Image (cartoon, rainbow, N blue to C red; front, top):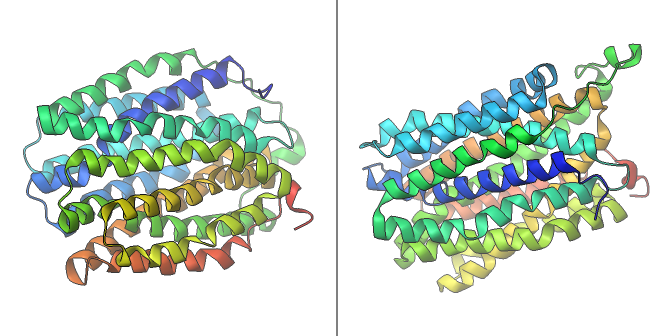
Length: 389
């Protein structure tokens, strides 16, 4: 076991686990919830996208602010913001009333995610950064394996209100591990560190490269995620539990890939590893419209999700090694701004293509975008483990 895994990281892991479980109770089937409130395909994409706009706008400021107010305060604030919307969604009766609550829910992760990443990066030892990120990333799939199926069962038997109350209750409990995390000691910064600026050319160019790569890739994944429940329901008439199974299988694959992918990235170089694992994704997405059985799509989606999730430890480690500690909050904020922008643009593109063109158009668009991601991955900076690449 990694020596860095102390009480604070254990508490962070528990917090991440509870938040992941709660969000997976809501997010996978949320487009169907909006549809049940009378939202059209375009309006579903609009709600998801506007929520992402708010999260995107807050991502970079939260990364900068976190360096000033402290990691612990940001974690606690994110939990409080995340816990409130599920309780209020119980009383919503139209899709436009759900919009502001969805925006607050998404914004809470703009505070949580960069802070979480920075805490992990600050705790890592050289040569094991990707492995530590892989270990900590297990909280996302562990929390999401059972939640989507459970969500489908609860919605079918008890309604959406019970699902939202359960998610809100778990998020309220997650405040406990957040409070157990100790505030890290501030390092004494030298003259050279104080002069570091993200606008310096040596930092600005790598920041832009990370931003563009994640923007393109997450736009593709955003096209896929928001349309998947609607596609499965419209094309195959699947019930909610089976639709939830797709997200559960994706979570299970992510669980399997995180530690091995982190270890391989540490050993063979992050940039090389990223390029290799994303290469098959465009072809797999291109095969999507040819599948005529839902279980074949289940296997395809699980494999695509697994390949994409294998890049997470490597990209996080590469970013940690590229920027000095005093700029990590900003760097993670820039990365997550690209991620959130992708998940903002993707649903809009997917909703327009699905409603205005064809049911297969969003998947073809995602295939082209991930194809563009391959050469972009080769422009990322060389980390310590990439000197031989």
